Image 1 (tube, rainbow, N blue to C red):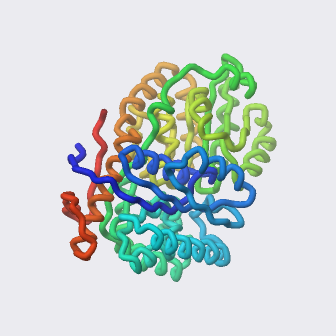
Image 2: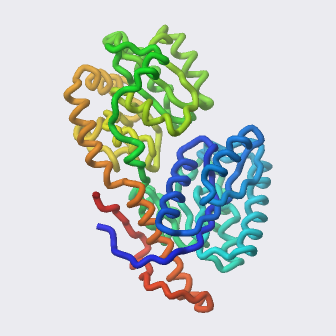
Image 3: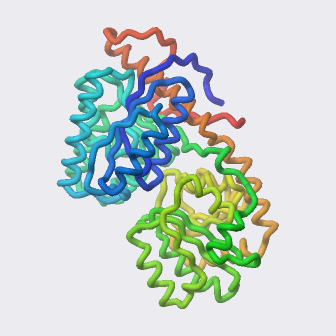
Length: 428
């Protein structure tokens, strides 16, 4: 159960990706900020934008004035921090972040700085340190996977760790993520799970217009995948599995939502296996339409190599869909096999095919797994997650004031009792 806190209204400065940036970190960051705003905190935000998405960014910012977004221009959107960005890109991005943060802090000093993704920590912790502003770093997932897998060269790893050690608190979505951080020698870690909007994502009737638009018949069984189609997601495994699955059940139709470097290889594989008529590639979909797509699915398949805690896991479960995921730590945190979803051996095409065919053949199984998943995911409500972030903000301010008494506060919040704190949102 969550600890009861007496919270003050705080001035929060956030820097990270925000919509229209594609990817989970942007949506999760937006949801956290909205939740903190609902708790009464004053928000300012700093986020990148590209020239291609500038109009969409202006529309988003106008629709959400409470987030007070300042934008800086980057040549392209970095959607796959699993691999290092070009040195020139990183230098351009970080120089702008450093300059903008210094200006925003000087204009109106915040009570806390929150870094919404690991890649925003190359210089920002030093900026916070210079201005004596407490700093929280949110681990989103992809970047950490690159560190763990050795994708990042040692000098970059060392440079990032030097900065990460300067922050007052690191938030991790799961125990396994916290363990990886600890293995790198990082401390002051608090576990705050990802959240899901239970009012937006809930079981609803199928969108008949969408079903017709995708040419899905009443007797089709819809298998859906949603991601940015990068190699880490292993979406190509789903095509290889489908090649075997449709030979045994020709009612299977696969809907792929998202885009990325693996889309063309997937489409080529579909043609090679002569199963293109069983696939619908729809590209990027506006976030407010994702729930309609999920409710069109009979099952959602995620074949990822690794995940911190994929938001789509939670959104599929909130819509009471059958979630089939690779048996990785990030999935095991939200799926109890054969109770709230199905797990298959990562990279095992035959096992994925067996699980898909089993779920396709058993509507009762799908109904049971979906109902159980919906009950379980209630613990991840956005209000609960935002409240725990609010508690984290109070903790770091209190701890920071203890070190810097000149930054006085009347807060009566206690600092964390240990380096790793698990905050489990209460079930509503």
